[in-house]
Length: 157
Image (cartoon, rainbow, N blue to C red):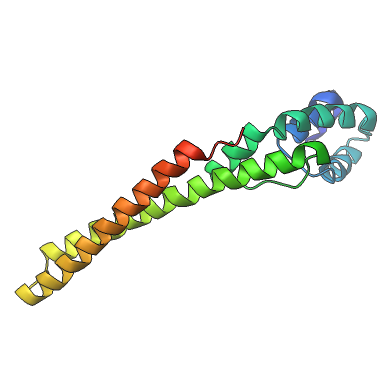
């Protein structure tokens, strides 16, 4: 935090923001160091009250799912009563993210094979690449089907 931010901080809001973003509690140590330069001591009581409220928002299963689906990472900061549901939802979202990545990888590989096919010099080379294209198209159909199934079935909340 800057000196100006330390001087005007609403410690509840700072804690809420950190909790809502799933920051580790040690984040306060960094803030404390930053604010020491401005001779400001964070109000830890207000900070932790805000952080707890922010964690309630962060630790919702819907947020865990979104983080996983978007390829984000989470910190294990959720209280016991919400950690299991959050992490299960995160894993469900991650499975969808991984399936999306697989589809994109296959599509990219397929485009390269089609380009390679167009540039092939011999009929034998074109036949070989054509077989690879057919195989990739089959893998792509399977990956898209798996992605569709996950998108329909993987919302655990």
